[in-house]
Amino acid sequence: MSTGISLFATLVGLVLSSLFVLFNFFKLPQLGFKPEEVIAATFCASHKTLAFGLPLIKTVFDGNPNLASYCAPIMMIHPLQLILGSLLVPEFAWYASQSDKDKST
Image (cartoon, rainbow, N blue to C red; front, side, top):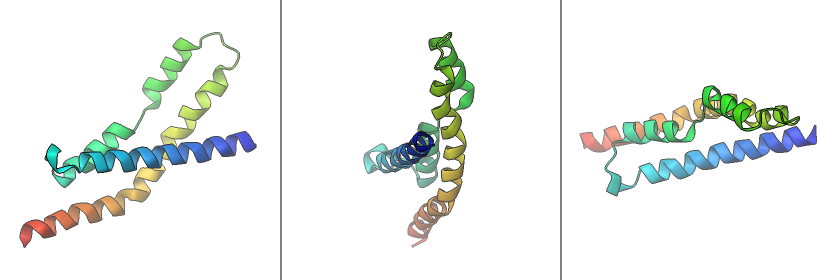
């Protein structure tokens, strides 16, 4: 049980830190992205999918008795990304609206 909790906490930290780092990277003025593009790039660059991850893990670790343990992180991270991303929508909406206000003044 404690292994599952520590895995969950680690994944939450990884998802949030990747979103934070990527958001700040894509906001760099040198890249010239509009706020809407920053938000889209942040989500696209940080999210991983089950459709790619599970077949890859199965191919690499086929026949390994610990295969289920190797699949656990990606089985947890996919819904976690969706939940955390949806919780951050108001913050991203605020960021995009601030840009709209700057344009109108």
